[in-house]
Length: 264
Ligand code: FBP
Image (cartoon, rainbow, N blue to C red; front, side, top):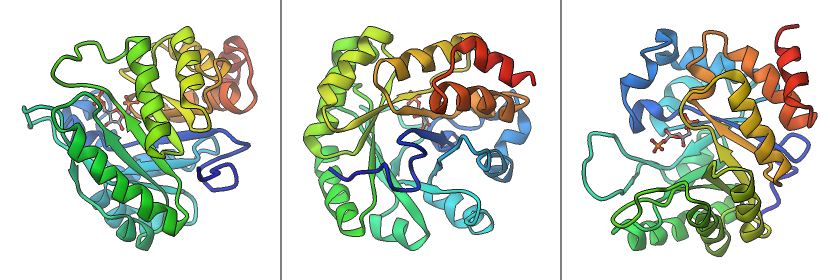
């Protein structure tokens, strides 16, 4: 296991990954509510907020925009990803190598594994190559542990999420990013993940209170933080919700305290 606590990926042992690969994974629809969110410079500016430990992007965005932000933002290179135009059984193309991620300044790498897909075997083999190469570069590995495919209709059932977290441990991920399965489900996922740390995936946009309550429950359940996209960049004032997240994640503050901090 690669200790990530002393890497730029962590702040006081906690993590807030600002995920911004939605243009590939979901397409322009995710940028409709807040048009400036389609501009990577806007999101890199948001990522300079001290609550954000790293921004997760695909290679093309990293190449084009990261050079202007490398002094202020830490980069997590998302190595695989697929568009929503793909209608087959869940799968994800490997778009970037670990060597190339290291060359462009990544402090960590991310990889999606669709456990339960008909393509799980190939994806797990691709993950092996990524994980072993990342060890050579001393880069922490974050697994987007997303069970989905053939028989798996509900990918947020607690037992399914716990299995995904365990799969991340068994395959050597340092951090498992899982869909939020509720407080009890998160506790189980953390237990099953052992030394692999667990972060909650943000999901679709919710109210400030509901979102912060979910994050608070994930932290109280033993999660080390959050990987979030839409609940930040789909807000008119993304820095405001980051002020609240900073309280909940790093200060372990209550949701009411966090909401008050957002209005100061
Ligand atoms: P969100 O916080 O917006 O859910 O982002 C996290 C993330 O994993 C992104 O990295 C990715 O683009 C997206 O969710 C994938 O969502 P899904 O595959 O569930 O539609």
